[in-house]
Length: 134
Image (tube, rainbow, N blue to C red; front, side, top):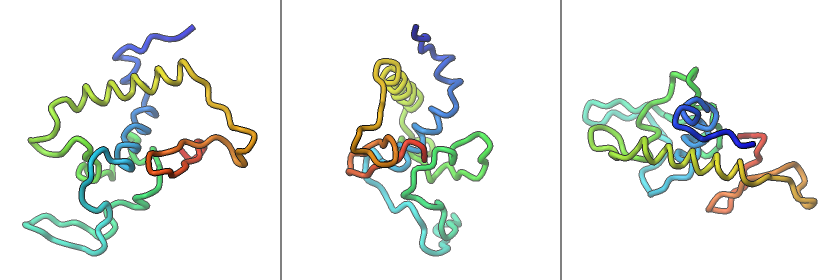
């Protein structure tokens, strides 16, 4: 029997939130600037340290855990940042989480015989991410 995917239930699934946020950080919906600052820079009074995002191309959902206080809000901005960010940000995130929950409730994922080290997720740019690394 499936549990209802209520708003309260979706808000309480912290790991799902971390995975969605990391997926949106790594696999941007729209193009934008580089993810890593190669040297310390100060622009218009804003200091940007070298290596702002550690291991920017790796998929690590724990970057977005509640325990991690080191996240700069401007390294994760799939919906924009500041006063002009997307008005439907929370609505969009809830819909993504609901879609993931529905897929997981209705499908099972098994490694194929040809898979050597377990199940993987394929990304749109043909990168393969092992599920155990997520």
